[in-house]
Image (cartoon, rainbow, N blue to C red; front, side, top):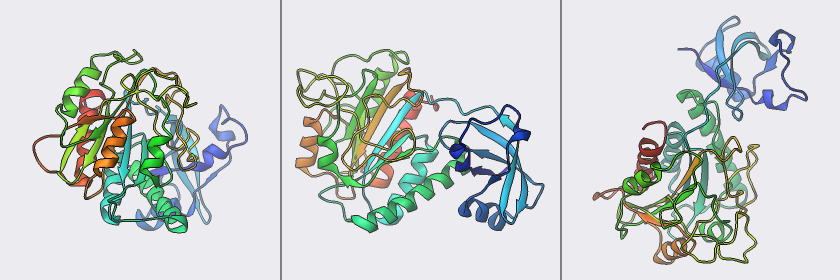
Length: 339
């Protein structure tokens, strides 16, 4: 199997890549990529590999040109990774280290576009300051490794760790093609059913202005996942994307890293549309998942006040590291590239 390596140096070029790749200088590998290629995979000079920049979806066939320092020569550009049929966001309340690592790695494999780690009232893990930034750097390395393994050429954005309450309060109204769900054991409708309703609209078509905005939240206390209907941000909040007159019209947009890969400051939200192409031609769906003990009653109520729609994942009790991933799989199977 041809190894795949993330090559961020392609994004730091002062000018666009030349038409003829032969005119491009050899590209250096960063230390993690060089270690993986040379020490783990035991590749040598002359071996071929694939490289990708992590943002544009572009990838190239390349050759290992030297090992000290580790550099590659780009040979030919390969077909780019197509834009996803649906942009998926996962807002995951912090769980213990191994569980959170598993969730992030598998979310990348399932095609998530945005990941927001959140501190909630019942989170066992409490991170702030230097510890939070160190953990986030660790997760970013996991994201790169998972993308290399599963064949993705676009890296999901990873937001800073931030309190759930502050994040919800900062959310702007969602785009017309965006839906958000929160997993709730008391919800009456399943995530799959609500997603099927969303699937009936064509890509880029405005979704019905009713409580069907898709966003899934995991409620580990009961193990059940529920979706919450999206509602608009109250008028006069100053949030982008419009100012609905009622809390039942639309949902706010979720805070996350910017399209350039640089995360927004904690508590700051993305613009209403987070389509990778900026064309607004694709649907967007968010899932909100609680920690091991679930969201508190106050947090669940606050999420719904901010327009999240409750949704169920089924009759069984799911762990937090299972619930969010099951929700993503349901959305991909209904709306995305697993359909």
